[in-house]
Length: 314
Ligand code: APR
Image 1 (cartoon, protein in one colour):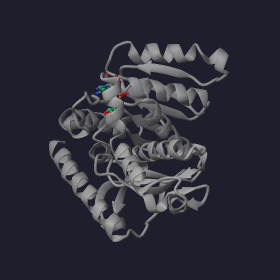
Image 2: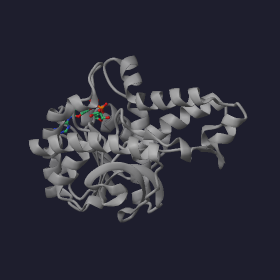
Image 3: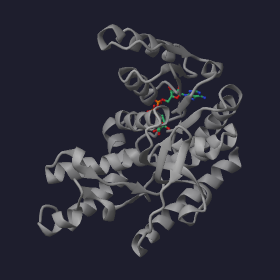
């Protein structure tokens, strides 16, 4: 059995553990600074195993050493957004936490595949890679699957079509500047333009879907008041972990380290990648039209600014 460590046993960490157990994917170690929380959640999920019929082992700990020899580490440690806060407001506190987590990874499981969820995502995944010293292709950020999944949901609702038929993705940073790629949106292989022509959906409706996608996290934050989204973020990260552990080679939008692709060097940005047993095995480069390029560049500027600020704090 492979081992997944979850650093942070809060809302997302607990949901990740539950999903991983239901999928019988790997043994789980939950780690958190809060006393009793990782142990309590590990015990609670373990006690569902006779009903859900999984055999994997789940343990909770307050020590980073418990992540020893993990195959995958998913990081949600940090403080989440409160209503009115942007993801960027979390920068200082979460940089310190992620930097500590990265150093622990370097010590206890330097060969693990790392998936960062902590916000502000694009900056935190850079801090994680910098402090853990893992190869850049073994460290990714979870954002694009979640953002794309939100957009797919809104389109499916509007068209009254199964969400399973919707293909789309989002490029760029995980923030208000993310770039939903309408030009690559298809319904069961049929371009969205056909549905616009058939008056099944209007341009203005699609624009409002794009805005809602960009504000996807904020909308849930305003509803929950005391926390941010956790079910969909957890599902998205599990898909990435599964593609790595089972060498599925899924093409997924993730925050990946760019080395000249898309004209960006040495920064983590959301792009389509193939994840397999070697981590990020390929970055898929798409040609962007003028409008998309303009939006993408704006997003890159926001990512670069925040990442530089975070790396200065390390
Ligand atoms: N080491 C381990 N765990 C830590 C540390 C640390 N140094 N610092 C904080 N934590 C733990 C907290 O004790 C808490 O249990 O991280 C957990 C975070 O859980 P929640 O507050 O429930 O937040 P969650 O909704 O899970 O989101 C976590 O993901 O999407 C992002 O913006 C979100 O940055 C946030 C992160």
